[in-house]
Amino acid sequence: MGLFDRFRRGRAPRMSRPSGDTTRTGSTSVRASSSADAKHLNEWVVQRRGVEGFVEPRTAVNDVTLLLVAHDGEWTRRRVPSAKWAHDFCNHHRVPSYDAAVVGVPQRMREWNRRQKSRDT
Image (cartoon, rainbow, N blue to C red; front, side, top):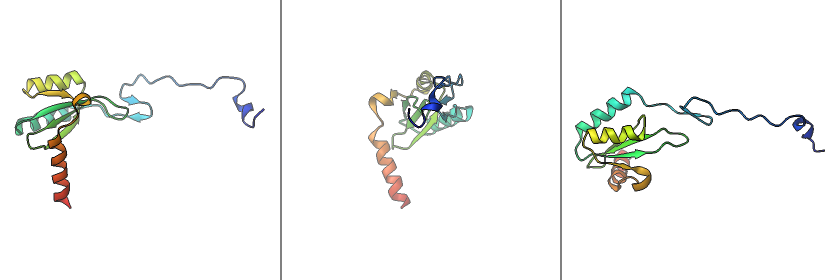
């Protein structure tokens, strides 16, 4: 008999059931998309040219997001209700949309980030 065996005897360890709340993943709470997110995306896409959309899948800590990248590499990312919503949004605005898990993000976005970082230092 081990030191802690007496605490384990009697019943199997209880496992909690998954929460019915779809905004929770494990022990992490995920903020759902809001109308402010949709408003920001709408304003952003009409104010820039050469925009492409990259739909990022749900992860353990983030909900589905839409990454919009302009012709010069400037970008924005917001939570969206679903991948279908993101593709429909892009189609409505005549913006090409891609699955980011398949194609990745464009090089011009990384270059824009690099320029912004060097400008700030």
